[in-house]
Length: 147
Image (cartoon, rainbow, N blue to C red):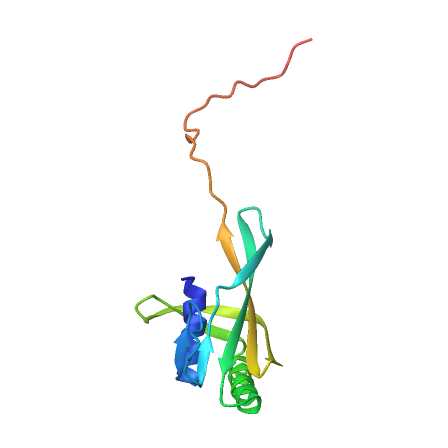
């Protein structure tokens, strides 16, 4: 699992501690609950040494009815906004890294009686660098050319 998705999942679960599904939602799923699918991403250029991936994570929040689902989704989204769109990045063991994920956009929707919280963020990754032998000693001969 992407550590950023795990951090977002943990943050949401701390705000609304319910059952979390990550693979598939079973037929007899627990209500209320979350469903965290695999995020989708697209890339873009960033710097001469990094590339950027923009992630989109459409989290589904199931509740007794659409109104309650939307109410919880809005509460979670507003909490992210109040935290200046920063979610703490955590290690797989749940300990903090001291770093944050900056959410670039968060929105809520109701579709088919389910609330969705759509979370977007950017991540930067370094390009692979080729190994090379460093230039160590070299000699320069210079002088004024004669005509």
